[in-house]
Image (cartoon, rainbow, N blue to C red; front, side, top):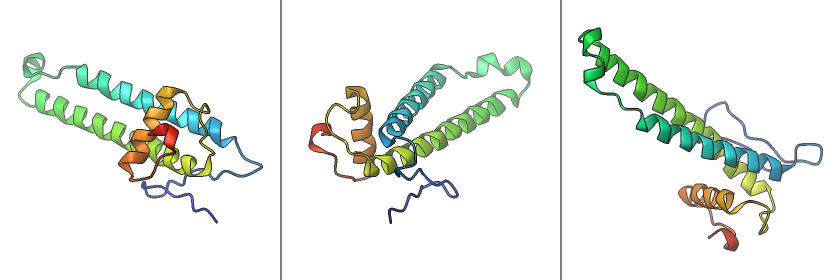
Length: 125
């Protein structure tokens, strides 16, 4: 039986079966989710955290702001791993014929599979 597991402890990934959700639809949704996490991460990165904006609040304010920002990036990394795990698992269970995904989704999927050392279908390479 296919083992749907995750790199995140305690977080199983969906198992495609006849009574379940359409795996192609789930895959599309998780690919869109992953893309939006990357957009959010880029947007957060563009939000400057500079000492000049914190020194009136006291000597510890900037370091606290910087630490909080680092935690926010860590949370986004966890979300990205969550989405990536689901995508990789669903990709193993889904017939990935050409035209099932948008070109953007195919690029994201190919990137995730490449990072995991998984061979992509020819049309994704």
